[in-house]
Image (cartoon, rainbow over all chains, first blue to last red; front, side):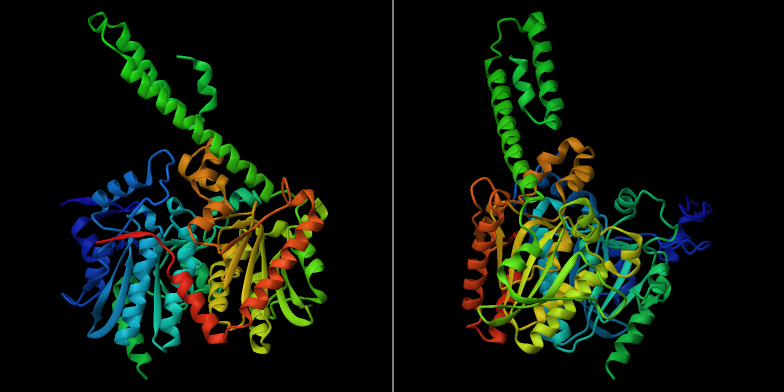
Length: 258
Length: 324
């Protein structure tokens, strides 16, 4: 039997149990970061997902070069993550409820938000309005995609505007904060939702510990940025275990119907 | 090969060039290859060095603009408000938990009409900078801005914002008070209001902290101001993993007014006095006054709904991607 060592509590977890437990440690409840496809599988009813915006892809329009070109980074990441970009969007059903569903993937360039993430959230928002179905976005991101320069900053504006139109149409908008969600995504569409749910232990902040430490030259509290600290500070509505997430979302969807 | 030339290329490219150089030299030493023409390889290498030299020159040019944008003798938000607005009243507090002085917000008159002014102020000497927290805002500042924008919207007062911030203040308290949601909400409020919003980037347009005041019907940038998703220092630390990449990062980020006009992120460049705004602050304020007055006149002609949907259209169209 193959085993993995939990990076939080160091206990051995049998691989099969780990997967059955939805990539959550059965001993310490540490919620591991999972890819968008796995997330889709444990969230949407089977075969209910119709992907939208599959035809758009990122392009190195600035010829951005650090120690590698953005174009090259994109090529490598697409192979490694077997995804087109840091989000998949589409319509789906959750316990029979129609939703417009977006799921980010940290494995694709740190879930960074560039033009494609922005455009896909716009497409998803338009779909939500057109079909009059609630909008749910699972967030995980290191922030804006620097390789797209200020255009990535503008995706914060673009996404806030797009989901804002959903809200104006009195369509429920919920986000699920998963580990980690920070920077430009935290300060845009992730935090303007009607309901903000977080997974246990998910890190959720705008400025990260490294930057803050540099500025204040002090050690940070051990729970800095955690979902639990955010709950205490009034920044999220509820913390929900991964195993209960689908039920909670379905319940909220029913409540919003009145 | 003249090794002196290598001093003029960026440090982070040095390894690559030296690698190719030593490979070439090694090949030359193998007796078997004697007589083989190395000219092509040498020429290619020389071309590469020339390209890198021009990258370095360009990075230095951009870095000068970054330094100008941060120059403490440039006019600041306070100076523009004083020079452009009459009877200005400075308003304080977010009516929730506190007051953030790094953002100035209030009401004043331009050509006899009430206009709201909101902007980051950095301060000049160290004492002032401490008061204004170097123009780095906390949630209370963004929420004060939202409050004044909503007030302006209710009374039909146009809004002018002045952007000059290194970015939002990175601190535990700011995070605990909801820095992320405060910035997001500010962006959201700026889309919702139906009065004209004119945005002027006067110095440093740093990341989300800048964007929180920058959703405008028209966004103008002073010639030597900058607007960026991350500071060149921050970008170099993450991507180059070394401060030596800072100037290159500044170039790669395309943060100058020229770049941003080309990318259609801004609508207009406001020219500065020769050598930069710090050389003639009074004249700079007058130039901005003329611009703001004209822009207000132009945008007050539109209906609230027109203004709102034009903003939505403009920002939701931003982005570059391939479409099959």
